[in-house]
Length: 439
Ligand code: 5AD
Ligand code: SF4
Image (cartoon, rainbow, N blue to C red; front, side, top):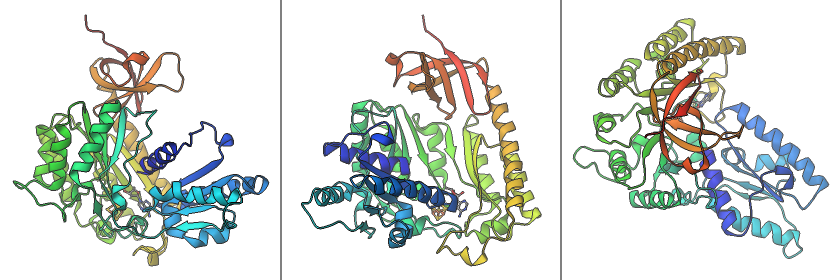
């Protein structure tokens, strides 16, 4: 989501005549987009902003701004720490960056009052409709499209409702139009983004034939000519009903891939996290999807070390994690976030215990993921070629429908094409193969 937001700001600036430089040292304006989900991410951003502030003291014409969740979360207290900042822009104000920059530049040129830090972190009605620009000269074969902003859930560990505000959906026709524009520029795959996508527009649009607004949107995107693949992230187990499950057989462009956050395998911890489902319900959803789509790839998010997580609770997570055979997972060590309802519980689980639990899950994941990849050796996989690999030399990167990264010798001509690749070698994270040329 942050990548998507950064891209939108970059596109707006590009339209105003700015250009994007590949090397940070050559930039006149540096904007940091920031994450607040864990403390570590904030520390990293503050460290980076500190370095930039020091550079700015040597070069007063350098413009430095902080955008996004940490700007929203910390607001003016950021300026107490980093008084040299030019801009602090909240999550509902990304589209205001070009105007604010105009003011900063005018004052640097002596055309305006001496600049104080511009802090713009208010809520703004309709801001969900502003994140739609894309950088034109670099069309992404696989693009992200925001369909909503904010979240109304109250997971006890999560800062997102505070930094991103209440759920606000974009109109369906605007999303469809944006995707059509992307297709015209070369996009073949879209990932629909939101904090809780299956709740998309539940308050704004009616259910039709028992289909949720999100399922209606998926149908519309599936009908767009030129789009080959659809993904979405992230859904919530609450409201993951049959109408959505059936999409995995009904909508051919919906990839057999699902990111499905479990968070914990212990019902006691799920309750403490204010995740309103049981592990049995979570498993039942996955069983249903696998029954109709046995080839699906499923990834998840897990938090280890939530306050009160005993060995027994972790064992419940471990065994569910093992039994569900996730193909990919993001495992996070719990981090206390200000203003969340779990904040008063503090952080009673030791760093060592969190680390050990983290490692147990990563070891299981490595094994499961490797086994799944090994089962692909010798098979032909449909791969969407996204672009040249970093190592260059005629080597390209693409993904399977299951979101597996594939390394394959190819050519520029094939960027944006769906090709067939025979898989020769695999690791837990990557497949390597050769193009199958049809004769
Ligand atoms: N500590 C650790 N992980 C967290 N996440 C959200 N908040 C926290 C926190 N306070 C994780 C969740 C979520 C993912 C995006 O980040 O697993 O799904
Ligand atoms: Fe955070 Fe829960 Fe909303 Fe996800 S559903 S963004 S974890 S509050």
